[in-house]
Amino acid sequence: MRLFYHMLHYWRGARCLKIEDFPGAILHFSKVIQLNPRNYYAYHNRGVALQGMGSYASSIADFGLALKLKPNAQTFGARGVSRKLLGDFDGAFDDQTRALALDPRVAAAHGELAFLHHVKGDSDRAIVESTTAIGLAPNDPIMQRGRGYIQFCRGRFDAAAADMERSLALEFDPYAVLFLYLSLARLSGRARPDLAAVASRWTAAQWPGPVFDLLMERSTAQQVLNATATAPEQAEAYFYIGEWHLLNGRHDEAARALEIALRSLPPWFNEYSAARSELARLAETVAAAS
Image (cartoon, rainbow, N blue to C red):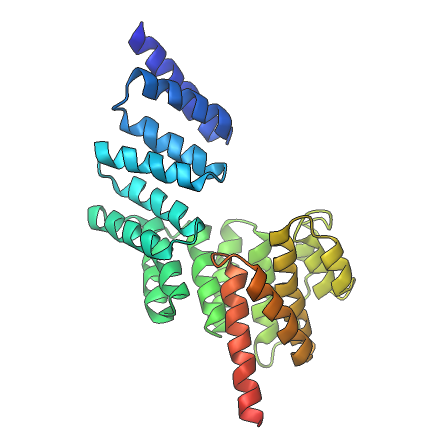
């Protein structure tokens, strides 16, 4: 009977996890752990559910308990993500490295290392890791987008556009569309692309819908700010407002908006790294002109 309840709660927990019912998953995997405190999978899966709820410190604790029972690349990688989302980039780097030491073919770990190299300023190594991730998971749009963001920050707008186009062939993502547009708009000799077709797939009521309207000159910067519902959305809004000013040649206004974005965005947001790169490019432009 004990085994029956153990399997029942595990099955229900797995089902809850699949449909992203994180509280339900936590409840059922906790029952499994009560019945069998040495069940590695229950600790790992409860950690995943806690991570999904934004309880990153608690998820790290569960991943640690799982790793004591069974060192595993998947769990090291998952704990690395939670550490990244708490801003512990060194801890995240260590976990992803340990994941790859156990299994060098984990594409997600290579993708995470690419991001971590990028935020540490080693964009060359970031591209190597990101390209490895794409080679291991060529049909994963996340890996393709990840390299596209890094290329954008490097100022390789042609490469960024190509990666975003490939990612969008695999999965629609509004942020990939925005960075594709920004990349194409920055390419020398290319006309500003028309966002109308792709913007129709993302209603203005959904964030980042208002950004599409701004870039298509159908709204104002203030309207975009008024449309934000959370602090992260407002921080993102300042980044895209900065890009809008930049595309229209208003460098001073662009710098002011991008500086606000840089102060406000969490450092693991793609817009944070992009804002930092854009400000560096603006500074180089000013220095060259003086």
